[in-house]
Amino acid sequence: MEGQVQKGMKPRSEEYLRVYQPAYQKAYRLTDAGKVACNRAQVRYRVSAKGKVTRARINSLRHKLHPDREKATHTVNNAIRDRRLIRLPCEICGDAKADGHYKDYSKPLDVRWLCRKHHKELHKARFK
Image 1 (cartoon, rainbow, N blue to C red):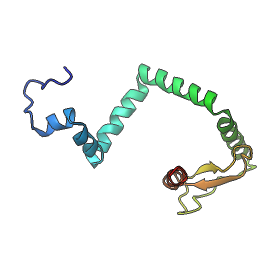
Image 2: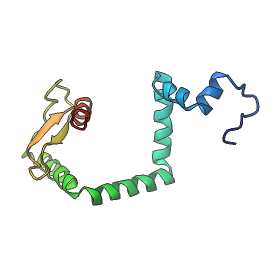
Image 3: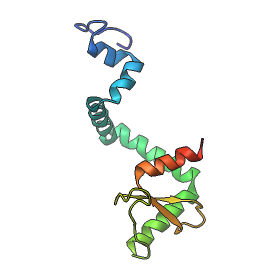
């Protein structure tokens, strides 16, 4: 079925472009409707048996490749649970939902609190 036009689908129709043209697919994913559609597809995949197996395999691989990161994350989560560390808002924008950023994984409690947006920006700037 891949590469073939389905019955009733016109070659230059909106539906045809969305299904078969990668550049159009990318542009569609950036629209509000595309974001909703992609999110629904991701959720459906994550709850499927295949999605669960894939997620478990990826998590296992990540734990094996980066044990220092995992240890730091567990240390911070345990400290938050035991109230030895308090989760603070983002240092830049003040968003209450913040992730911990580690400069050095060997010092797991030396953490910067950044929202997802600023955390990603920091990593992008670091690897340019």
